[in-house]
Structures are given as structure tokens and as C-alpha cells.
Length: 154
Image 1 (cartoon, rainbow, N blue to C red):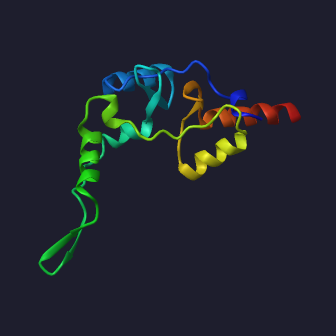
Image 2 (image 1 turned 30 degrees about the vertical axis):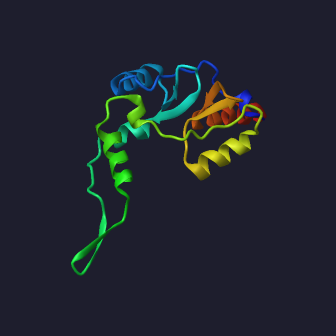
């Protein structure tokens, strides 16, 4: 079975300048666990998932370091810490979105999708044909496919 056979084609997207509150409301209203972020040309530039929104409500940990005598060796770069701060304190979609986007083509096998989801720990996954967003697929779609396949064999 191909990704195109299980993907949702009516994809709701948000723009980089949309507020985080709008994104959360859309996710709740539509009952989805992630929304692609598209620029004005319609190109997917990021994705916001439930995990991205949940991370905003965790405690901000100070940068970790390793102490040697009187010196400190940082265990993360200042840019990584700034990115975490922006993610937690930002107010726009561009601040909290995950990038680069991990996507799949509509003609790939569902097995490829399942492998991508488990190895890269992504959900949902935008379905992109060339540069165009044509759908989105989530773990729920795979479970739904399995339920229908198993239901017909009983």
C-alpha cells in the first residue's frame, strides 16, 4: 500500500507569523496532532506538533556545563540555548516549529512511512510531491489502515 492511499488530503496549514495560540486552537478544533507551517508561496518550511507545544510548558533548564578546576566547559552551544529559549518564549509559529521538515512522497510504501516514523520519531509527516504539499499522514492513519485490513480478513 502507498502513502497516498492513507494520507489526509485536506491539510490545514499555518503561516510562520501566526500566533502560537491560533496554532493550538486550530489543532484542538481540527483534532490533529500537528500542522505544517507554509510560507506565502505554499512551501512547507516547518511543522508544529503537540510535542512542540508541550515543550513550551516545561521548565527552562540552564545550559549544562562541565566543571574542571576553576574553568567551565559548556556542553551545548550558545545558539542551541538561544533556540531553546525562543521555542519556549516565542509567540509565533516560526518560533516553535520544528525544522527542517521530515517529509515523505505520496508514492512511497507505507512500510517506508512506518520506518521513518519509528526511526526519526516524527508524527505527523507531511506528504510532499515535488515542492507541493499534497497531504499529511499520522500514526493514527496507519492504525486505521490496519484496523480495516484486519477487519476484512476476519
